[in-house]
Image (tube, rainbow, N blue to C red; front, side, top):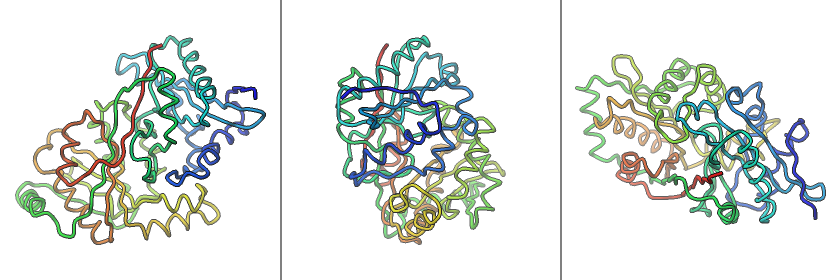
Length: 372
């Protein structure tokens, strides 16, 4: 069968690009679909501001008229300028277990990157570390969660066969919710609340959250500045993130710490919506959203999405303030497990904190690189 490659130029091609993973993962229990209405916005340059400072190419691979693979190539010019790099990226790669398909997709992106004077290709990695990143290399038996990669084991073999080597690994931890709050946490919490001038802000409604969203994202910009792959959000992107995620946030699982009325720490978690997404097949309407909400209310698994503490207040127990309230809410809501967000293996402090809290390595993801 002849393999053909085609750049995505039309809405029809984009539809094939967006929905292709559902066919390759049809019998893959661990996989969950994207929220497809979000995908349509994400891949629309008019609605996703990241396209405004990036060069991109979306590619479909076909055999006898059937789509057998996809990939996105991108160059984040803002990130390259900030970090003085000439690196391209590949992202959202999916294909059948065939060497010629993987080779053709990656070779196309590599040649595209060479023409743009790039020196290296990194991936899987999207516009920023907020997009799914890395290939899963350990923990294939565990179901994926929203905004994390899910791939068949053979993808690791295919990518390494093309000369890609490890750039960095990211660790995902599983934490068991205790029956009783650890005494150390409660002592630190009491000391900081009563004598430290810190305030722990909790929320009842989505409306209550609105005034804190931008300060939270501004703090994320400050604290994530040196994290590999992170690109500071612009004001417009902050508004987009708020608009995108606010409707599905559970107010119970947003905790904010302030001092002198300034946001100096936060965590955002979400009841796992994987089962609901699978039942809804990634579609919100007409009844998909009801299925997602139904299973979110019944899940025992909590997923940490984002968190940060201002550098000035680290090591002072601020993390314990947040941990106490997240654990309290998790226990109250009947949660039994918490899945951490992905943590760079090089972030020794964060890894140590999660392990100290009882976290056990659950999944591992790998970002690869190749010199051009």
